[in-house]
Length: 233
Image (cartoon, rainbow, N blue to C red):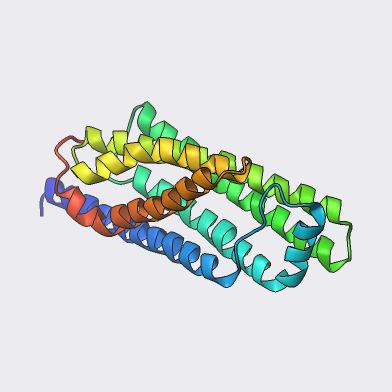
């Protein structure tokens, strides 16, 4: 067996493994979000009085913690794995600013997600210990601000991933359009966590659905997209 054949088979095996990891990470991310959204009711508005915020976490003490572990904890780790797997695959050009931005912004978003878990646990323990409402509201506000920053970073990561995949001609037209559109949509939607607005809330809901669609599509379609690659990473 020639050296070239061995190298080709090795590369093929490595690529296949990358896509398995990508698909698992993407699926876990999507499922964690969808299940997480169902386990607890909508959070209070950022303009609600402190006592209302306190009452919400008292009445949904366990559900809000489970939701946080899913949408911030499990989803955060899954997104980090998704970003690393995508950046290491043939779909993305191996060098350049787009790949670097994908990794930087994506892993930063995942890190913020894990910080949110810490904040949510702090809220849970504070409420369980009959802590004062003003502290609960302050922690809740910190979670919201973190969400705003996280969605901006997610938008940057997805736009960068789209650009990096465009370099290899792997991304499909609708994925390309959605990937670039998600940057402004996520940034605008993220403002709903700090600005009370029905319009912003509507954009936020849309942005989350489109985000899950993009991650799910890239994850599940990765092996097919690999066949479109025409530029070596």
